Image (cartoon, rainbow, N blue to C red; front, side, top):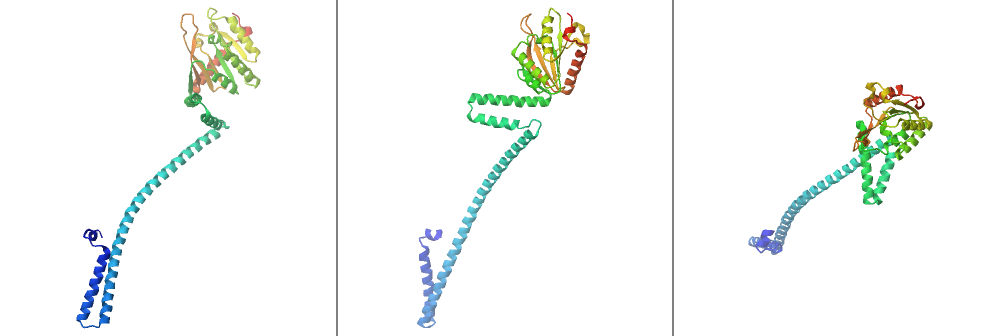
Length: 325
């Protein structure tokens, strides 16, 4: 087709020439063989028609082959595109189902685990609603709190969680959560604690624990008179005894040398977790120690040691009224 057009011969003209030549040649042959005029014309028309039909068939076949080649080419491209889109769609669907499955698994763990009771679902719901309308600082604050909570859960799983400085929440939450026992050792570090806001809230939480049947025991360790006022500590101990707390006191000089060190504050809740504080020396020769770190210890061996330490001091301590300075 392209060759014919390049030589200036159109397909229609070529068909006319082919038909004319075929019919004319047939007519001349029949006339030379002295056939009748009618038969010669009929035969020449027949041969020309056959030649024209063959020409059309050959052209049709050529065009059909071209169409098939074009279709095959486009079909390959379409298949490639479809395969690419299908794979992408499949990847998106699989990723979506993976996220849904992971979310479902996490919610099942939250709702069926020991930390369930709908609390985790409520946390997610409240956090999502806060994220829609909250200002940037509120959202950032909420995210940091959630991160802090997540980090604490991870630390507890490892056996110990830490908080820089003096804790304001763990102590009260543990006291409200206790159901078996609360055993505490109080040293001179607590001399100014009981008059503080946290100290008063802690006493109220202990009184609530006593009312719901949780035994609360505390040993006050008295140091030398030049380091603290024993009368003030005995007064605090007596006030706590009136709240239902089982209180005893012991002086450092009454302890055997092996029992005097290390002497530090701790509280064991339900025989399972120890609340402890690490201290740093304050600035200046007369400065009181400051709380540098608060610890929640779940390690079984460490908790057992704290329990034994408390029982050793409890065994030699006496009620406040029986102590003489």
